Image (cartoon, rainbow, N blue to C red):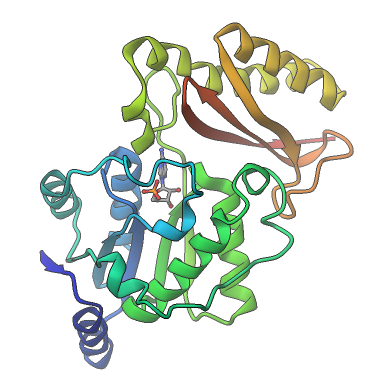
Length: 282
Ligand code: AMP
């Protein structure tokens, strides 16, 4: 596995691969890799000749009071995990090179970024789409893989790809969970053992919603209220619970067809997100 830090080096490598007829897959991450990331890497492995995994804790997607400075890092461990999962090139750029002093151009997907996480994290998605656009230009992938764990992010990136005519095929990989259902996340590291135990409530509340719908509950507000009650009982603080259409993220009118139940919850200081897609008949 090659480890590349310099943007120019990555660009010229990408050109070399393309000029010799090789296809490139990209898996963008912020590092501190876990099974969720590795499932994306393995998926990407089967989609192209060369697999590039990027590790970059993107400063512009963090708000002023968020966890940029304490975001977990372990590059040595990531190198081993990324290589074992089949990465050919580990691209680890430095912030100063990605955002030189006079940097002033941003990519903004307007509507899809307004609700859900966009409410509490107003500039977050602009940071995400800007860095992903840059990564696409630097790594020149034919294919990119993102996780359903960040459902809104995946939808926003898909919109950007289509709107800006990026020639990149996007795959969305399913959520990888711990035994109790907690979605794997680098931020789970912040949880104390006691908080970690309580954090299982995110997934449990999604399962509760699924169960209520299966048993005939038709009222979205009743479902949201029950989820909130369960979460609060575990001392979780609800940022949002929404039931939306998976393509537009607009609140559902009625519970039929495809729906996305999405939530963000603080367990202690740690903000965790999760979601569940349901395909309802009737
Ligand atoms: P991050 O390092 O948190 O920015 O995540 C990098 C990529 O991994 C994103 O596309 C995430 O959606 C995806 N990802 C993170 N956690 C999981 C998970 N538990 N299951 C599947 N994909 C995940």
